[in-house]
Image 1 (spheres, one colour):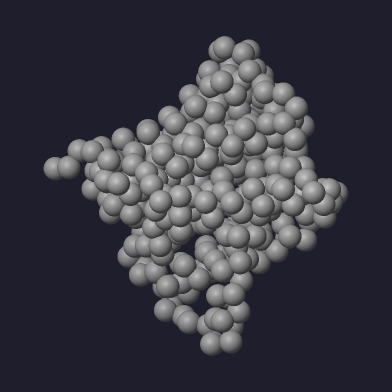
Image 2 (tube, rainbow, N blue to C red):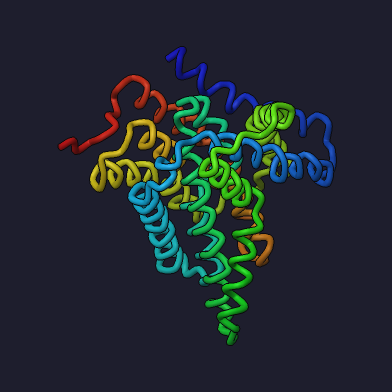
Length: 321
């Protein structure tokens, strides 16, 4: 148990430090701007480039792993979307945000920190692949569903262009593409540049987790929406269980890849869900509440998952054969 505490405490400790610092100093929300810029446009892209550029090319073309991961995550979105529509009579835009809240885990801010801390650099490739392709899926789902719900005739080409632009211009996706290209060409940056990239990459996880704590403090939980009674269980419990079953059933994957995918599936709702909700003016306050409450509960659920992994209670393949 001490080993699990050693893994979990730095992760959630950084989030707690950010939360406490924000509550004590009471800086305005605008003060987060430059830190967010550093994380999103500099530090995390450097981390993804570093990890991917040093990866053997053959490991990057694991389409079976990518397919199972995307199918599982999309299934969670569909199930939460359907429940929202049928039980709470949510509109299509509201149900879309709720579906994202259930399926879109915090793979950007929390993912790299917790996966690399738990499994080391062996988790780098599955981490980057999951991040890249899941974000493409979510960035495509949100505008497509909102366009469908608007009921207005919209140029399909223009919509496709907007989606493509949003995907290809995202700093993390650009870093992934550049990193893969460097791996293919076996390119190594000059020593001074490589050292700078290393410094920036090392800052990624601590800064991202601290910023997440600050963000939670700046969006206090005013009330618990009723929809969270099914969104959070799907987000923190059903998603990782379904991911574990699917990877065990459909393939014979490396243990670290399985554990990394399951761990990322178990992460709380991504802060990007709040950003998307704000962009479309739908379910904004409830999205913020979902992020905060799911993050708090994930302290227990993620700890339990890591305990199962590290103690051998959770074999990498449920159906060996």
